[in-house]
Length: 103
Length: 103
DNA sequence: TCCCGATACCTCGTTATGTAAGGTATTATA
DNA sequence: TATAATACCTTACATAACGAGGTATCGGGA
Image 1 (cartoon, each protein chain N blue to C red):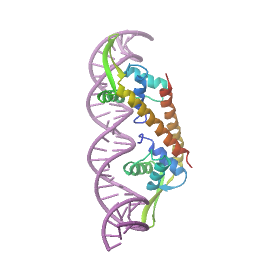
Image 2 (cartoon, chains in turn orange, red, yellow, blue):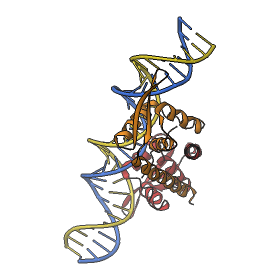
Image 3 (tube, chains in turn cyan, blue, yellow, purple):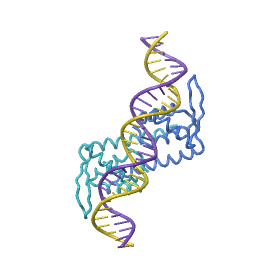
Image 4 (cartoon, chains in turn cyan, blue, yellow, orange):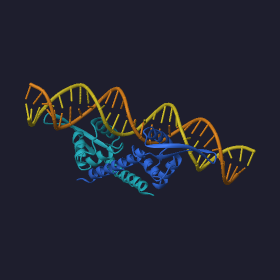
């Protein structure tokens, strides 16, 4: 179950804790949310590519145990964007809760 | 700024407080959220029609002050769905916050 | 009087972002 | 030996939003 629009925030947040790669990021999001969040590869990889094009993240490809890994890390621009996305997320949640709570 | 997927919940919630109509529902959501939520008519009306087809809401058309109004009210099915949507929303928010909070 | 903003409904084209399913390839395990 | 896990990718499709347009009424200000 994935609400559209929250994946970039989750990716930026994951990379703010150190560089990582697609498969690992997806796994962490799934595990840390007790499998409530479960983004498919068809959402993850295009999002990573888009964020790279936007200059939010940068990548280097390496090979570990014979398997190719594309490690991403935040750019300064990405760091700024993380703060903005965090704020937007909290603001949105607050707004929905205000409406739901209102009588 | 609207995260995709939250509109049906907000509509069901609005109608749980009494019958209402599209224009009014949109206005309430906008006002009660301090304009953070601002769904356009191109999102609102198709969503209302879809929810009616799904049997979550029912409508009656009346005329007030010469203007046509289509009043919606919750069906029993819609009431059950509201509880499910509420739960899903809270579960999702909790999941994202768990991931964001995790180190 | 005339136009504009607010009210009230609607649809259509486009865009964004997800799922499902497929492909390629390697390594570890049953 | 075959299957799961790791690791990348793409394509077709579905969904749900936005933007912009249309129709129509009513009330208020220039």
